[in-house]
Image 1 (spheres, helix red, strand yellow):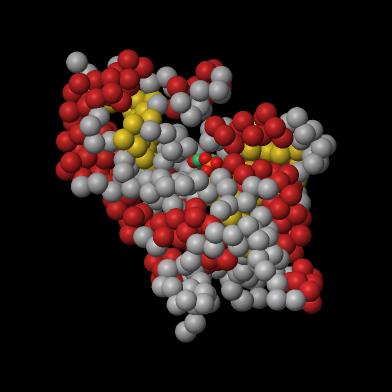
Image 2 (cartoon, helix red, strand yellow):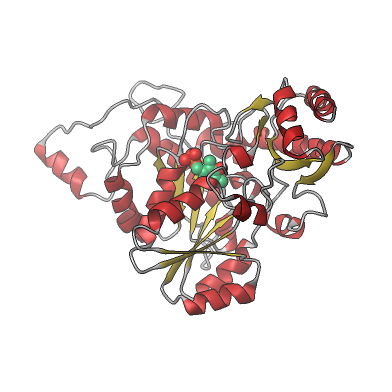
Length: 410
Ligand SMILES: *Cc1c(COP(=O)(O)O)cnc(C)c1O
């Protein structure tokens, strides 16, 4: 059947990365090299002229990066067909971090005088990159309540230089969701491209290309790696010409390339993506329900609850509800601090998507540089705790929460 049309996530993550090497290594070799040799001047010329600009110099590409990129391409494109019935092909570029991949995304699509539309409650680093870097380069940054279609249309009409709409769904840490398909329809009717930050959902739960997205972004540092062992970012696009020319130019010239060791860690981590996601999601559902019924908790944000304002959007575009939750303790900021200090199994750390459960306090950590009034507008209150639910035994996890919550409500 070949490896072109694999349907299962685990089959893809176990069998896409190339085993290509001279020594029959079972795992993808770590090509720790800055440059690649030529056997002759002619061979060097041929490689420089060809379409495949990898195997020249590692800022341009490297076989270990390629193996990781091909796995993520297969994951995001799986089961999707073009209008003519052929399987969708997408191109991925592996970067040193999510921020590096997002920089390539923004600079290859936007220049001075253009406008970027996005929405509230983005990952802190994304919002800062827009407001502190892109705006200095002359790009107009417009953050709106993107659920309001009339407002989106009015914003597009008032800003005919809009080139890109950037979505993050579900958004970290409030789990707000955006209807990717609906926004893509409006954007495309106005000649605007759409990029989707798919970090929290992963291609296991959500495939933005199937819903019309032009670009998909990942902080692969999170669930794709899964073990918190390295930083990586991935930018994927379905306009292959644009990816191989304009996007590739910015990628290579900005120098945000990955390295062979981190790419290897990513390939190894992705092999268990499906197994991990299944367990993360099951545990998150149990933990969310446990917290919801706990007397010390005022409110739980989890898209699996019918009371979550975007439950219907999550249901429509995700296979299951993402394993990220946040909650407010009745005791506010003080109780939140006590809870974080009292946990014994959960890990106190920012980031998300690792095999172990992580707890953090967005107002003093990830979203510290976003003004209080602004972050409160979209639900990041002082007492909000964010939890990336891991794959631990559920009884152990609940026992830890139980003892930490009883400490926090004393
Ligand atoms: C972590 C994260 C990023 C930034 O990625 P890095 O790998 O830390 O550079 C962007 N978006 C989301 C949703 C994230 O969680």
